[in-house]
Image (cartoon, rainbow, N blue to C red; front, side, top):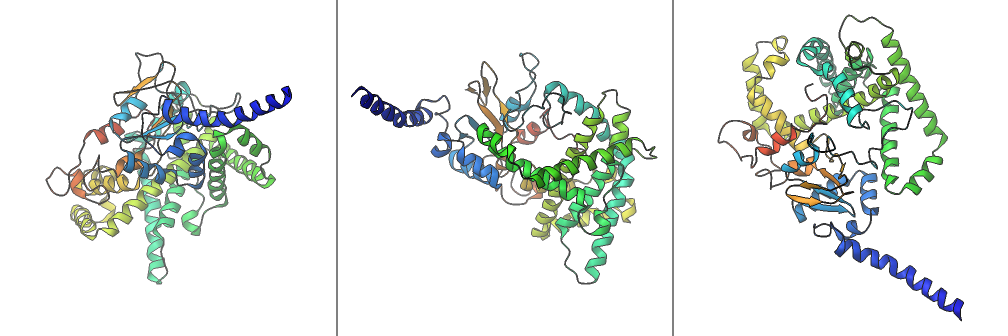
Amino acid sequence: MTLGISLYAAIITALLLPVLGALQRLYFHPLSRHNGPRLWALTRLPYMLAFRSGQLAHKIKSFHEIYGDTVRVAPNEVSFIDPSAVKDIYNRRPSLHYKSLPKDPVRQPPPRPGQPINILEAGDEDHSRLRKAYATSFSSQALTAQEPLVTSYVRKMIAQMKSRASSAAVVDLQDWASYCTFDIICSLSLGEDFGCLDQDRYHEWVGMLVHSLKGKVQLASYRFYPWLFNYLVKRLPKAAQVMAAKHQATTKEKVQKRLRTEVDRPDFLSHLQNSKHELTDGEMEINAATMIFAGSHTLQTAITGILFRLLQNPGALSRVTEEVRSSFATAEDMDYRTLSKLPILEAAIKEGIRLTSPVPLGLTRLVPAGGHTICGEFFPEGTIVSYMQWAANISPQNYTKPNEFHLGRWLNSNEGPSQTTSELQRSLSSRVRGIVSDRI
């Protein structure tokens, strides 16, 4: 009889605990006052599946359209599109016991002891050291010295596209922009390109890099459930392990070859070698791969997005074309210094990037002990927070007619719809962990 009662009590408890847990998360959790989809507030599972499928940015964008500026997107996570959240989340705070909100350890786990440090995973101290080391590569002086190299690849891309267009072949602008940016960043990072423009295809190493990073994203989506993540890591296919090892070996070989070679032009590694912020060979190798993918992918996405929006808006394209052609007699007269002074061209670039958002997801941060105030609201310790770039860029709360392409948003004139808040762009430039290659 006692055994029967105990078993009955155990069954009732097992059934009640999930129900009580669900009620706590929905109605009594510190984040329960924030609107959002209820299923996402109950469990990480829908977030994980959306992250794995590549639909997370679209999902969170739709939630902001329904629920407003601040949305609870997981049991312990909140997403923001109010531009004032940027300084609250990403700015340094020397007066407090932490420099800035720490990274989310689930999506950006700290490097393992003894492993070279990747700039994307580095803590405050190492991130500052790596960023300072790379910053000289993107100074105005460095970019001026690198401009002839960049220009040579752009001209090669245009020549290749003209050659194919003259034979009535289909020319995919996205592919050619990708080949060009990969060759440029590879040349600057490793001292040699991979011939993507010459061969009209990706080099094997580039393909390995893309597949490797896609695999890491797929695997990282399971980090929300450590037991599942550890189980899958132990059962990775041998082919995936071989590809990762081959990619690392190729990267190491390329970096070491470049370090042993005297070059007559500046590149990223030459600046790192001369930097007072010393990097180990391992750090140069792992960050070379990171710089190539992050730099080339964001540039390719931005260029493709800008061209796509201009082709969709013939009037804007005509204005940009007229401004460029009236400012230069020949293409050889163009350079970064003079091009950066063309207001209509600059407006087209900004508007294209606004609508494209090369990095659409927010950079997640963890609220430390003692809690933190964001947009005037207090959030408890352990809350994951982020500013969702793409959702903010096309929100009617931030821009008038946000889905339309209008040069007038960025010109000092009354034409077109206005930008509803100037703080939006000011706050973006204040992120301490902004992309180090913004200038390029």
